[in-house]
Amino acid sequence: MIDFELNEEHLMVQRMIRDFAAKEVAPYIREWDRAQHFERSVLDKMGELGILGLCVPEKYGGAGMDYISLGLACEELEYVDSFLRVILSVHLGLNSLTLLAWGTEEQRQKYLVPQAKGEKIAAFGLTEPNAGSDAVAIQATAVRDGDEYVLNGEKTWISLADVADNFLVFAWTDREKQRRRDHSGISAFIVERAFPGVETRSLHGKLGIRAGNTGIISLSDVRVPASNRVGEEGEGFKIAMFSLDQGRYTVAAGATGLIKACLDASVRYAQERKTFGRPIAEHQLVKEMIAQMVSDYEASRLLWLRAGWMKNKGLRNTRETALAKWFATVASERAASDALQIHGAYGYSDEYPVERFYRNCKGAVIYEGSREIQKLMQADYALGFRQDKPVRCPLPAWPFED
Image (cartoon, rainbow, N blue to C red):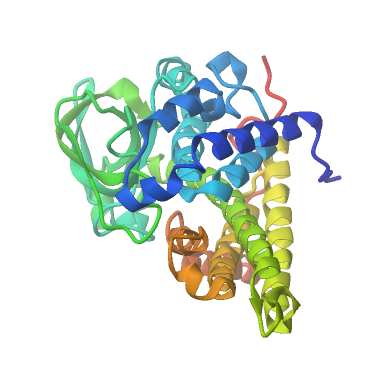
């Protein structure tokens, strides 16, 4: 039976994250967003509070909390700004949880432990200039040379590209399978920034998430120890899809927080602003927009909570997580648009946060599986074209074993 009541540990995490975001980010976010400035000290503070290893077992340097706690953290972080949630999505969801599920014990000790403690920052390298939703279209290659692989290629739209110490990179190890578009020729690797041939540069001029760091990773004859391959050769695509399950979960929960931010801002403004001699909160069409935000928030929250419950049980949750991501991100786009409409001309300036919410929300309906990809997935499940085997998820169930 699913229990949606938050326990004391959940409430503690919620209060801690809410207090951190309110004190350390909220007073400065407008200036950071204007300047397209990524504030590195935020990462350090998140590490000190244990946020970067929130649901990593204690034996690997994490806080040992459950996956519901991760969702709550993402809600609270994106309530203030999307760049905060992106940090957790990439560092913990896409990278660290993948190492927890697929890494060797040696890899966990060398990479996962310092990442969970916040001593090292991690990123995820799948997207390329000509490969987004079509992951099999990547061009990066990894050629075996003795006890090493030589990696070449370019990854783009990589969050934390300029600040990460470690990257989880996907490349073709079988060129014949690449020509046939057989995804079993893709493998995954842990690449350190310190490896010769690794270069990064920032992307500017983004519509939203301007306070976040986004960039390009260039790999030029980068020699990576064979011991840094994650999983077996040819398991890279499977690992990438697993990673996206975790990332989509954090995106869904974060989008739910953005809906709540839009709702709260709209309620405050609607009660204060007067037109035609009365508060706009009394106007029927304003009420309609606020009511839509309420229903979208509640539905989005129930969807990601169900996915989180399944993660805690160690159950496969690809369909449920994808549905939560699709619904919540589309709903957040609707909520941000309506919030701006309610604010009228003031919503069009950064005097109020809703214009930032409007710009930030758009990214989530594109990355980690676009809105269109999510629709196709859900239709394929309904039509029987796609089925997940009822197996346990490789992510460890909670509570974690010692």
